[in-house]
Image (cartoon, rainbow, N blue to C red; front, side, top):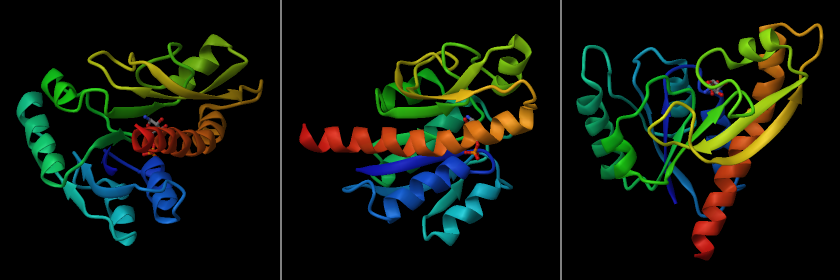
Length: 191
Ligand code: GRF
């Protein structure tokens, strides 16, 4: 299965997926391309260092539909079958979602449906919850609202800051994303 990863920044979840694929932990898969909507995303270099093609389809000044159509075309050209959003900071248009129906995944740093949107870790601390975590989910037209695929809980400690909680959640994100992609690839091969 050919995977395309969309990023906007650091790309640590992208690295986790690429490394798992390259170590053979997700048999029958290949990361065909990484796309960033920002030319200065640090994740681009990390992908290239791993021998993965990394491209930029700039979003600046462009309408969402037009931007997404170009991304969809770049992904399709490379035969991408599964799209993984990994810190991709722009909502996708309905036409992009239809083009890859039920084949777009995202990772979010909370136990959805709690704390969708930005600053999920801060929201968790401010609400005083004792458990947060991360969620891999399908992407639909809403904000972090698609069906849940897999979740990992993380304890919120009384002395946690946004930074310490984010770091512990991120460790679980890397595990969860690889596990979810693996499950999807394995079940697609069985089908
Ligand atoms: C992660 O916390 C992810 O859950 C959220 O954005 C962050 C991206 O981090 N959607 P990275 O770019 O994968 O390091």
